Length: 571
Image (cartoon, rainbow, N blue to C red):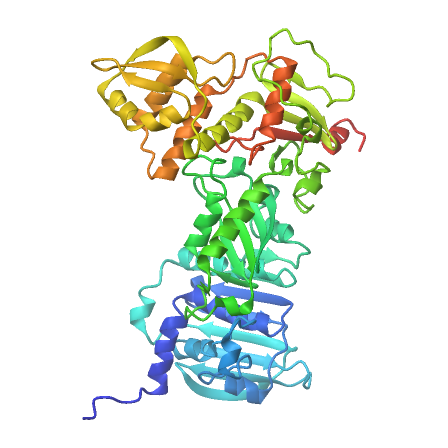
């Protein structure tokens, strides 16, 4: 008997602090969210000692009168929730009603606030130490609220010793403010640490301006607009061009109905949209905003509101993957010489080119890529404009807004990759049987790789049989172009198969198709006839992702007319 008891408020507040206040960055997040909920248009955060010594958050929001200010420091006090039904799709940030008392229980806290509709000369100043209300006084300040948190975790040394270095804690606080700054473009955010300005983000008219202020203008110029609607889900935002994706330093930000959240599965779904457009190991930067019905998402599953739960997570994942893939398809997703304003809409209409970017070529009858080499130059009357091959490597073509420069190897690689994937996952390729099969002597590991991948090799057109010992005989080969060296391609593909571990089935097929496409495509330095150029361009823009090859490099570089005019002094 007597073993179960009600915890004192001070202990309960410290338990709540363990949920909400993990480190200085948590304090910054909670206080800035409260400022946003109060309608602030300018928020300034100041840190000393990484937030260990001092955190000050000032805003110009609506503020509070004395009665509300005292009540706000009581547990479960909130102005945002009235009934349990209000918890569904909460439209505000700091709705839990535990942040201020939880922070006050593990620090020395001073709250100064003035209500926007009150007496301009009268404000309230409340002092709290270790969760105990010490003083309520009158002071003077403009409308808004300032919360000063000193000596965080001074009365809980076990938590204080788990704090990281000053630099790490400062970086975490900056990351928390950056995340919130991405959600509210209409608010000015500023972060100062020991007198140095770390974040200076004035209110912005567009997300690209905010990204340029928070990160760097170069990153903003690498982003493509994402907009996709399917059922009740809308996905908007920005995704990095495949050519600019890197192995490190990527940023991935997710928001749902204006609220930032974390979800590694949705990030993975977004990356799946890049399949076949970037090399393995590269990670693109993403800023994605989801809009879903409030009843289909639960924002109350995490104490610090960092995670959410979707009613149909699989449907949302598919929507995110499709949204990213759709953004990478138009010509506007290709690399640009000289840069263009990333604020302009990015998509088929952004370049003045239809969804089939090279519309004139899409209407031409199919011509064989294996056209005779003596095809005369020049376009027949009434057909598409001429293409020009330069350096026996690049294809130039005029577009409505400039010049498109196509890398013939990367373009053919994209064509062959998507063709090979269709064959590996559907019908096999039509193979060209050889009158005299050629034989290849292999190393034991290479022979094992051929045996393991025999079905995949057959799907793309290589018919292979054992020939005794470590040798194999190749009876049929694919025929992607007239300069194709079948034996060399086979040997290079086998060598790649032997060196690489391609992982699961779908990943293995993609890697196999990419390897074959790279080895089989026309090379830089191959001179192509005009009919071959036309057919290559036609096939390229029949692909799903024409602007990118399988390694993340661009197949197309745009040279805008405006850039030409600028260079020649006409603009």
